[in-house]
Length: 196
Image 1 (cartoon, rainbow, N blue to C red):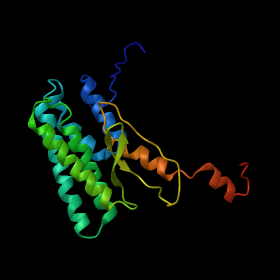
Image 2 (tube, one colour):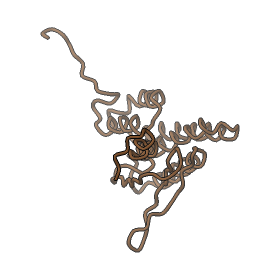
Image 3 (cartoon, helix red, strand yellow):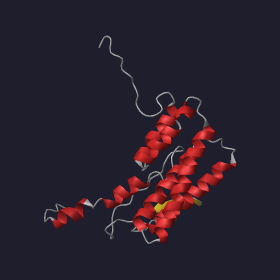
Image 4 (cartoon, rainbow, N blue to C red):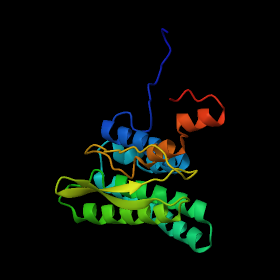
């Protein structure tokens, strides 16, 4: 490959590991590809200095636009598009505050807005998702109950994210698990249940 210049570019921020990982996680956890790509393009110059204020401004503004759009969709009776838009708003709000200092009041405010948008998504989604408390020792963990899409009994999965993610970011995993039909039920309908 002598004489051929090869640019190694694995995403929008190849020289900013934290921002690059955030973008990949945004795509992986349900960010709209076009929305994420446009926001990343807006942040190209700010990436070199890891400008936290620029990062916050871009993602927070996008979250706000989507929150307003999602509410308009719900008000017009467009529950699927309204719910999907509010879910992305919640995700972008979480990432808006990802690099803000832990003492900055915007962290608490942004987290509250994110949970509010997620709650609106959860209520509008069919079947709806419910906020629950999972008992643990003398306290409890806040959680979201995601019912099976087809109703009826099914397996239960408990997803406990690490310190750098949230249960709301893992909702796609919960929904995928809720869509899976239990093996015994599928085999029984096919007449091939080897259950004893």
